[in-house]
Length: 155
Image 1 (cartoon, rainbow, N blue to C red):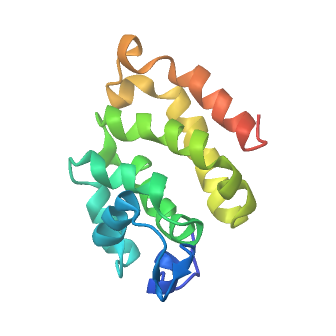
Image 2: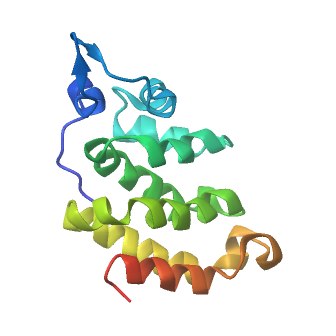
Image 3: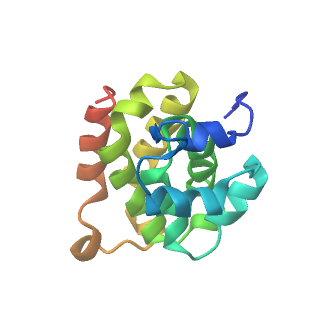
């Protein structure tokens, strides 16, 4: 997946929070965590984060601004599509939650990023065992995938 966007700037990260007297109007701890983990990271560095057994990096995708999500989501997708994600049930499970929460931004964003998410949703929906994701814990990936595909207008 090609992603011609430049690395998100500080304004991309915090520009959506209104300022009062030159300071952010509120403190967003989840955004701050995502910023600490991803700010200034290249695609290779972000991909490396997703290979670590730390759920926080997947969780950061919920909270980062849309411009940052559009830049880093392909790295997460690349991880899910790689052999490194074999047995990573949590990483596969998070995909459904990310799409459920961020589907409007994914639909409105770069079509190539959206298409990559759609391809990966279809594959994850068919390969639950590959991720060692027990249905009694994670639900049925095929059903969850179909629901997410519908949210993205690809059902």
